[in-house]
Image 1 (cartoon, rainbow, N blue to C red):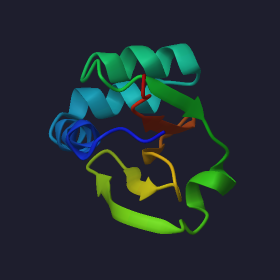
Image 2 (tube, rainbow, N blue to C red):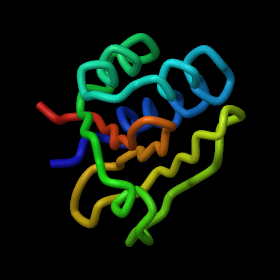
Image 3 (cartoon, one colour):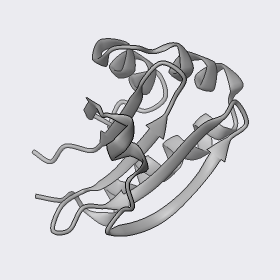
Image 4 (spheres, rainbow, N blue to C red):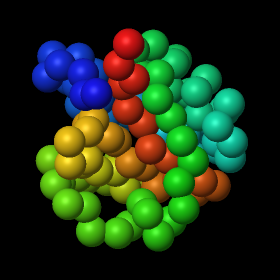
Length: 106
């Protein structure tokens, strides 16, 4: 079940914080496992609780509903996409791994 639009703003705020902070980008580029991803994400926004490692094929496949996309200064392509009938998801392509981040509903 998707969370409310207000809660989803945390993903956009995370992108803004990441793009504006090279240390956060460096931390994400160094992550190679799910626990490291959780630590890096939680250091920016504790409301982002959903996380998964994803294959490059998934991170680069055409999304059904693209909301926004871009690239951070330290070469981290990102995109916000809507899963049909599901949550807003942030996908990141980092140097060591690729990630999906979302807000889990209660």
